[in-house]
Structures are given as C-alpha cells and as structure tokens.
Image (spheres, rainbow, N blue to C red):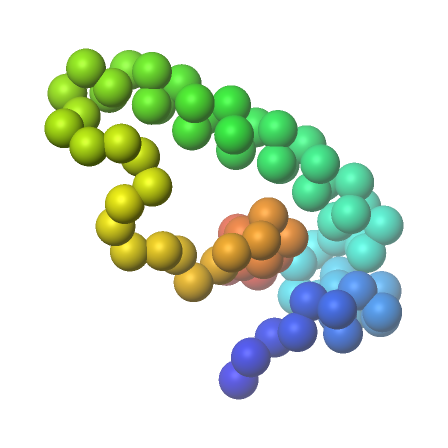
Length: 77
C-alpha cells in the first residue's frame, strides 16, 4: 500500500491519523525540516571531508526524494 501525500493533505482527518499533525501544520514543518536537514548534512560533510576519497553525491540514491516525503515518513513511522 502506497500512501499518497497529496491525498492525505486534502483531508485533515486522514493527515492527523497518519502523521499526528494537520495539513497546515505539516506544510509549516516542511520549511523548518528542510533547513535543519541541510544544516546537519553540511556539518557532517565538514567533519568528514578530510577522510573522504570522493566527492559527495555518489552511491545509491534514496527512495524518498522530496523533503515532504522524508518528513511524512518520519512522522508516519
């Protein structure tokens, strides 16, 4: 079963039951989550860049591409 974020955002009742927050709250959280995500990723890169042999970006790509998908998964799980 695939959970469609767009469908969940249309129904506050469904959104609250899946993630614990309303659609409006979820949309506000995305911008804060995005800023925190990139800040942590940059800090981790700065710490580990001396040990790296290759540039970041290689390797397998994640299944959750967008920030909304990542945040929804965290709240759902």
